[in-house]
Structures are given as structure tokens and as C-alpha cells.
Image (cartoon, rainbow, N blue to C red):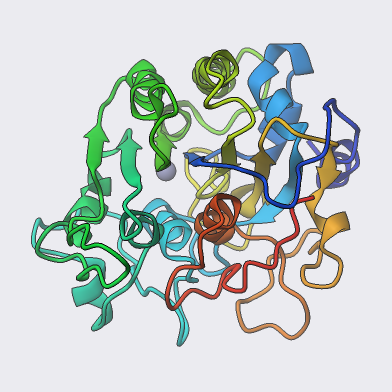
Length: 345
Ligand SMILES: [Zn+2]
């Protein structure tokens, strides 16, 4: 699809209902990353063939968010999501590898200093944390925030150094959705879940980032949509979760440049990604229209981190936005939504 068409369609209205109050009462936040999800994939099928993505777009959203300007690959971008830092620069997390890391590797050793995460902020307040992933290399995060490498908890009662209560790796997409339902439970415990769907990326590396309806890639997008549907249905069904659970959905990168990969970080197909914030409240709003004082729609560009002027909305804001929805402070040392000033309603 031509990018101008992409941007035109991205502004079409969808559905939704009453406004989110100032004190939103959100007690569970789910940060979802759909690996290799290009924004135009969401537009490639009729709304009723991607019902869950359509519903999530009915919150506050944009299809013109960006991955990191220097890296359009998996681990550097997911590290940005959980730390609120760009990859490079003085505030960067500096994790540039994309292979499975050795067991003794941590984000902190690599950076030469402790790199705090959204898991720290939530766990140090005694709330529940979990990471569910479809790729084994996410073990890097389990190792970085384990009982030996996580920071001491100096906030309130001591909840320990192991910042991740549950770490789940599975190759079965259905087990990711089921795992989210298990972690959410009946809504009686406050939680932050980081959820990673790999099937989209894994499929497209084999058959290409083909957004033609019926392609293997689009079938994978629909498979993720079905899992999102399970999660949304569980939220709808539980009074303790309904209206009290937020979903922030983005992607680590797009894909298609080259056709079966996504490592050309200067190509729009690789860096234009969605950023959707949903609580079940409305009305539907565009994130750039709500944030003209602090963020700027980058049109088709992906400006460098140190560019003059207002930044675009980036996937690396996901962690801090989730914390903002939970009423918790920003991640120590973070700069992406580090002021938690992204207006959501
Ligand atoms: Zn990939």
C-alpha cells in the first residue's frame, strides 16, 4: 500500500463509549508487543476480520508511531519498551545485540550501570509482574531482573530483587493468550504484564511481509487478533477487570525491507508501527491530535533521537505509558515518556 494511502486511512473513525476519568482506577496494565506488526497490516483487512485490533483502535491510538531510529530489530526495541530509553545516546540502554545472550549477560553489565525497568517500578510497590514471550532470547530480561541482578527494593516494604514474578516462554501462540488470562486471574491482584506475540515475525521471515489478504503473514496477524479477543473477552467477563484494565499495544518494528526481514531501519515499512492505548473507555481519539504540545506526527520520516523539535510517538514509551495508566511514577533514568506527559484522553 502506498504510504499516503496508509496515513489517509489511519485517520478514519472507529467506535467507542464514555470518557476515562482523571483518576482512572486502572489496576492492571498489559503492554503487548506484536513482533513485526506493520501498521498497514491492520488496514489490509476489513474491520470485522480483525475485530480485536479494531476494538483496540477505538481507544486512543495512532498508526504512525515509530520504532527506535537506529535499530529496527527485536531485542533493542523491546529493551526500549521496558526501560523507556532509546537504544543509543547518553540516555540509551545500549543493548544492540539481537541474538540469544549468554545466561550471565544482563542489561546492566552491558551498560556499565543499573538499567531500571517498568518491572522495578511495579514490583517494588508489591504489585504482580509477568513477562510472556514467544522467543527464547527474552530470557535476557528474566536474567537482568532476577534475584541476583535486580536492584534492592528501597520503596516501602521490601519486595525483593527478583522483579519478574513470572517468566513464560512458549512457541504456542494460544498459550500466550491463555497465560495472560491466568496472570490476570479474577482481577483481585494489581499487575503489569509484558506480552510478546512472535508468530507474526516468525511467519514473515519465512514467507515475507506480504499484506495481501490471505497471505501467511496476514493469517498470523489474524491469529494474534484471536488471542487479543480472548483477552478482551476475559476483561469484559470479570467485574474486577472491566474498566480497570488497560492495554497498550505496539510493535518492535514493521517489516518488508528486505521482503523477508526488517533490518533496513531507514525504510518506512520497517519503522511505521501502531501505538494503541485502550481501557474500554472512549471516546476514540488520535494520539497526535491530543499531544500537539509535546509530540509531532513525523509524516513519513523517522527522526533521530537528538533531532531538534518535538519527537514522534515511539514504541519505547510503552512502559511508561502503562505505568502512567496505573498511577505509578516513570522508570528511573527513562526519557521516552519519561515525564509521563503523553495525554491519553
Ligand atoms: Zn524478525
